[in-house]
Amino acid sequence: MARKETRKDSLLRLISDIGGEGTREQINAKVPEYWELADEELEIEKGVGKPLYWHRVASVCQSLKDRDHYLENPRRGVWKISEAGKKHLSSMGHRLSPPIQMPPSQITGDLPLCKELRESQRNSENPTIFEEVLVKTFQQLGFSTNHIGGRDEPDVLIEEYKTILDAKTTKEGVIGETYVNFNALKRYKEKYGMKYIGVIAPGFSGGNIQDTAARESIILIETEAICKILQNHTIYPYEASRIIEILFASGKGIIIPKDIPPSTIDQEKLIEIVAKILSDVKLTRKTSFSSRELHTAYLWQGLNYESDEIEKALKFLSVAPFSVLQMQNDEYSLTGDIESILKKIGLLLQAFNK
Image (cartoon, rainbow, N blue to C red):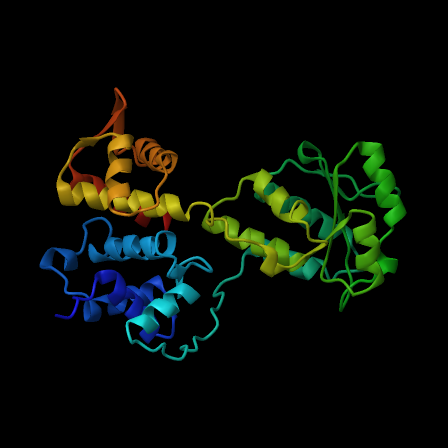
């Protein structure tokens, strides 16, 4: 008698059929064709606006990645079949379909500060404007900045993080070694007791400037990389220390836009666990539970959630603006009925997105 196909195998087959890689939205849209869904799984969750089965798809994908190693998560919101997953599909007698070519994503809007950065970096007649825009930019990102500028002085200091920013403009193209006074930057570093130096410009030529910068431990940063940080920051704010880490502690001598990770990359699992908890509370109608109890249940379900990650998710739901849980004697309990809570969360998210 043939073995009934599991939901895991069906989901792998689905991803294979759309080319071996797909976004959450692509996968979720086709799940009803591959899974036998109960009526309750097709219901739209109040306050969330998505069918219940979406949470279950997320859990199965996570298990296929963490437990079976059949999936990879190469970037935010995308699942891709791994080599191990391809072998498993082959053992099932399933052949991988050719990839579906997706059009590149478009940035529909532009942040005012990004526009100012792009314009001022080309104003070589008045380079002070670029310095001033960089000051505004880093203040927007949560830094306390000091614009000095002038003869024999650094352009911008971020004293809390012992960082010098050197702004370089050019009317067109990129800058070469002759644009940067490396000896002066070394003097500034010693004079002010700084740790990091970053030269920010429209772009950099190859060869000497990159070699000299590497030798002097000076980081070259493209203006577009700063714009990428700004764009990500509007979606979910970076910690200031994280921005310094991205720019100066990555081990790279030149920072370009593709080197900038999403600001949500460290929050993906938190978001997933929060959604899982709310989904399970709605399904089971439990009104109180402990972190340890959830950890045990999720281990049994094959989910790779650490106890501290679950605790972090519970605390996230316990504080403003959500405050849907309260803690007493190591146990969390709902502050209201689950339907009202989900409605409240939905309204909050709607308000934030306006």
